[in-house]
Length: 186
Image (cartoon, rainbow, N blue to C red; front, side):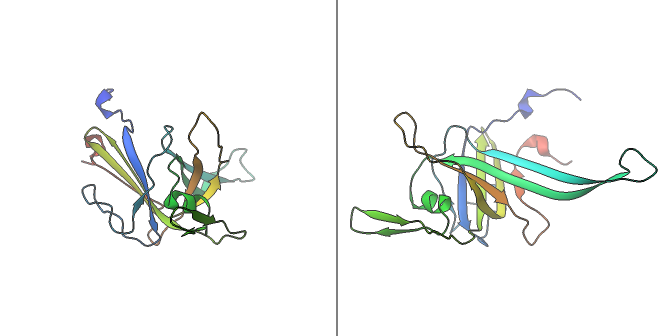
């Protein structure tokens, strides 16, 4: 098997989208993100970090010093990113159950609840490298970790979030679409 530099990908540009849980996601790479999907806008130049991990449990036997089997016990998938556009969609994602209201024509109020409710949503990640396009769709996910919001002179104020993917009604935790020719199953 030869090395092929044409199969090396980078995320030159992209977006993170959110929608209410149950919103229909695009089923191909040509369809637009439909009604209900909102682009979170600018993200920090760190981009988006995707993590996928599994845990196993060893099955030991009296007659063996090493495990005789491993059983898959959990699967975890997360997306991490820092939104640097401070707008209603990013603020209410970072602060679950928060509401944004207009106090007057120029003053807006974000009410951050003391006891937020669970905030499951659908998430989409799209990135492009030349003519290669990728979409990752998480039908059920939730922001489960938040970094500190730092206000300073030299960097944009950012909302650092980690989204945990949950299994949907189908057996998938997520769906990844790509037109990458190296992905051909044939």
